[in-house]
Image (cartoon, rainbow, N blue to C red; front, top):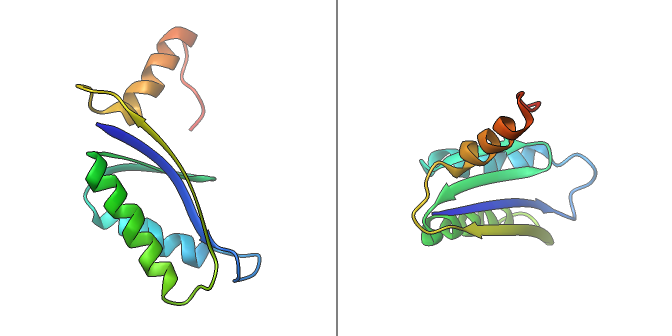
Length: 102
């Protein structure tokens, strides 16, 4: 399974980009993959081709009306593991002895 954290947004649409980010989050949501949206990006979990397909669809959705797009990605692969979005956080919470802020 792969965890992919990414943020994608246009650079030519002014200061407020939430409408463009929302467009991409909807693509993530409809993919059916497990995901978590946070203030600086989105984490999705799935097979490599699945998560890369989501990023491609987001890019294509923005490309329709954006002349400049930035995408930042981090990818973490660990063979044989699933539910890593919550599992990694749970592991930290166990070591801390208390929940982290969400």
